[in-house]
Amino acid sequence: MITRVVLFRWKAEVTDEQVEELMRSIQSLKGRVPGLLEMRCGRNVGGPPCGLAGGGGYTHVVVSSYPSTEVLDAYRAHPFHLDVVRMIDALEESYLLFQIET
Image (tube, rainbow, N blue to C red; front, side, top):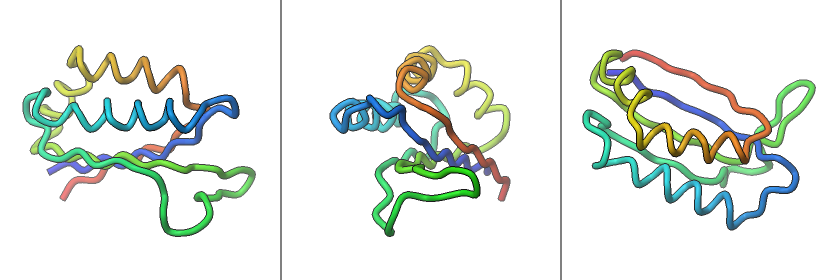
């Protein structure tokens, strides 16, 4: 199984409402994209936004799971996913991506 974790930092002008709409769009991929086993997303509730040397401000995370790398590749090319990617690109300042296989 492949688990994918993405942390996001938004552009300064992005509103809470825009991020909430994006999170709903991301969550809606579950059940609409074949092979997507799990999709969870939301705001950091564990304290101040994640900080890193030289920066920080990562406030939201998306965690998703796939049965194989082939299914993940198909997900990444799926039109519904690409629609969400365009939304993300318009709002994000930066992101961190981790993928693990278990």
